[in-house]
Length: 372
Image 1 (tube, rainbow, N blue to C red):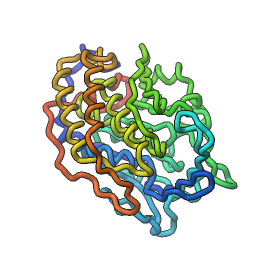
Image 2: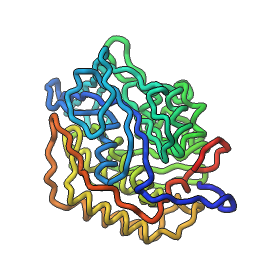
Image 3: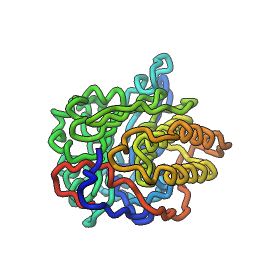
């Protein structure tokens, strides 16, 4: 995938000038194992993704809604809806059910804050957007507005196919074609789904319209596109809580692309942060030394592959396995991570200017009005 090399030359901005838009509500998450509450934490895909983008110095704006009962301090202030409660999820885990870290969870939406409407989005353009609702807050109209104002849009399929039981709020999934979002698929650049969610889309149809990335928990991920697919290796992890692993993966994947990596290398960064997320209960914090090491490795890797053309961005570049090893070594840096109950203090180092960012090259020309 990628724009036709015979087309107009694309001007590559620096990472310093690349800014993203995240749309998705913050949540209160209550983690319940075998009927006993084991944790209460800040939740929502937007919180996990923000932690990764902030840690890797990727600038972004965030649109999120909460109620007056919102219990956390965040790096990006949400919109407070006086007449609503913050979205609340209860995640029920059964110690006796195994699997890949997802099958053992029953998720229930206890309360839901207001949706994010198109009018809530900033009246400006963004280099990339991320539609990452978890509680039904993203409508087809809101996603369509994001597609209009963002050059490249990443979507987590959970924002599109979740429905909620009228009685107890249990999350259930519906087919993408029945969701009301399917018509927008050709305008989406990347669609991320878990292994369980992927069965609710027609992969052969979807991969013709956009790049699909399917996460497999401890088995890594698979990247699908029109002309092929690739398995991307995982990182070893000591799983404590699978909540937010896919969100952290998506944050790392997007950060890798923004910093100029090829898709397979960016997926490795995603796998790294997914593996880091499951080692903590709730929203993870990342050791500043680890973050700096990862940024250094990403920058070094980008410079090694800077001459790659758009036609080969989906194939594993030479040195891919070595990059996996270097990220694995970075993960071994002693961590001072702790579970944060009510405070969230992200690293505040300024974004690093990079000579060029390759993100726009991944978008296939889909014959719609997209300025890059």
